Length: 169
Image (cartoon, rainbow, N blue to C red; front, side, top):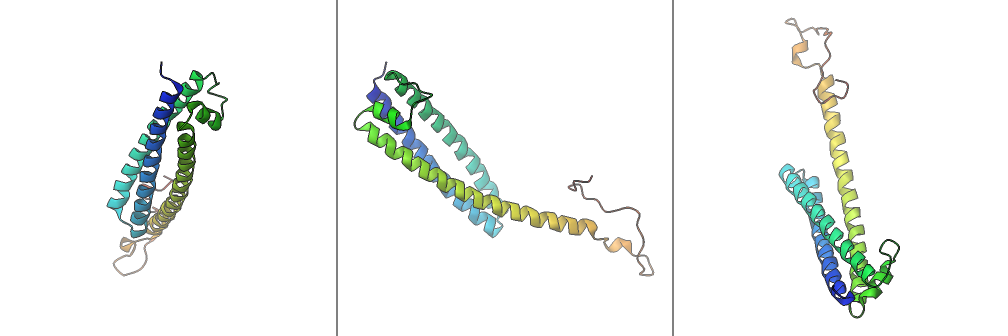
């Protein structure tokens, strides 16, 4: 059975991996923002796929770190469900306790930064969707050139123009 120091070393490694992945995710979010602003469809597609993959990897690394932290807590007799992060870090002993707390603070800061970047991207996407929706409504309401008769008078059409993306369909 590994010692608390062994768990501490492993936990520091897991937390550093989470930090590195969060830094990478922040970079991807900034690239995605640039693609959204430039209306670069290919860039948006590529960064969205990369963003999904990095979030999956962050989730996996975070789960590994949580499992190791739980094992560390158990190894020193702490209740993993009710232990504070400071208690778990202290259980790892010197020098790991300070490294664990430092990485956890870094992770918290990076996660907050990623959240803000994603909120900006979300608003850019929302605005783009609103513009597309407005354009689709304009096209759907436009009677089009076929609404005129041969004598250039407007034909009344009993059939409204419906787009397949229209929610009313």
